[in-house]
Amino acid sequence: MRQVLKRPSNIFYGWKVLAAASWIRILGGGFHTFALSIFFLPVSRELNLSRTAASLIFSLSRAEGALEGPAAGYLIDRFGARIIMGIGCLTVGIGYLVLTQAHSFLSFTLIYIFIISIGFGASFMHSPTALINHWFYRRRALALAITSAAFSLGGAIFAPVLGTVVHQAGWRTGAIISGAVFILLALPASRLICNTPEMKGLTPLGSPKPLPEPVISPAHTAPAGKTDFTVRRALKTHSFWLLVVGTLLRMFGFTAINLHFIPILVWKGIPEQSAAYYLGVMAAFSIPTHLILGVIGDRFFRPRLLAIAMAIGTAGLLFLLLGDGNTLSLFLFLPLMSVVEGLFAVVWATLGDFFGRKHFATIRGFVTLFVTLGSMTGPIFAGRVFDVSGSYTLVLQVCIVAFSLSSLVYFLMRPPRMEGQTSFNPA
Image (tube, rainbow, N blue to C red; front, side, top):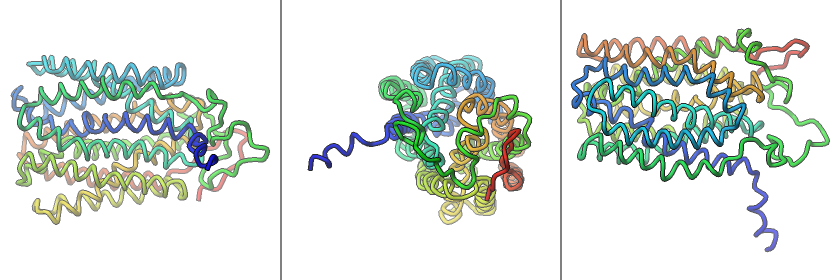
């Protein structure tokens, strides 16, 4: 009995860090990431914005997030994720409260980009991913999948609720609730974060001291400690640029569909509030998808998994394009599209496999910098096409092509080699 009572204290501290980071991401997913589509139409109507102009706001916020990527990564590598997450949670909360005072396109854009987006990118995107890469080695894909699933869990729980609030009380009330959540619930959780296992006298595998015999690496990764690329060396590899191009194409299609999710369903003939519930349904589908892909990603060559998953996402878009908005076509589209969202963890686990721990956050920042070209142009393209044609047909067709090309690029990707390092089997 005494041993049973002591057992919880023996839990690897990295799981506690993962729990805190996941809670923060649950709130970020429910009150920011999935909220973008909920705010899209109400903000457009009140500020008298075209779909292109409304898309531009959210796309510029992604551009700002990309520009801050290398700097945020450097600060995380230099000072640790804990302080960056705390500052970011506070900044996002204040930003949403200030956003309620925006009454023009310019004021809304400036507040959303230079307050909310700066804080969100650093604290909810860059920091948790860097934390998991530091704390986990063998279970890296699964741990990253859990934090990614946290976004979806937040969307599944809170997006329908927030959608109801916005529909009945207006988007400003929704913004006040979001701001309060980030300050009162997310900020305290950041205090539970520990930057690295070494600060606790641990290793990424949870051992309090180096093991007396070599650790067996997963078959698709290089030996531990031998893949710590510098940023300059990483930028010179084909693997880096294939990862960038594949992810850029994926994000072009994903962000276009994600931001315009509710407008697309309204275009298909579904009531706006019902579309918000379908957004929650897709988030719910994404929860097991993240976890399943994380488990598979720890046992399978990750680039190959990325390629297969993008092919599945392509099929999902075909169902949305060819369907007439009925329940059957939507419930074929939603789970398949959730596979594309579930790939975030696999992408960053692949980056960690390829380039190591030491400069991970900075290298990730540069990936984000380049990939955001797709994140920016996808929503703007979708908005412009609808403004001109009154239809999302061309948008869906182009996104299908982008997903297909992304699948091909991921399929061609292989691990990089450092000077003096023997090749290792990626399969």
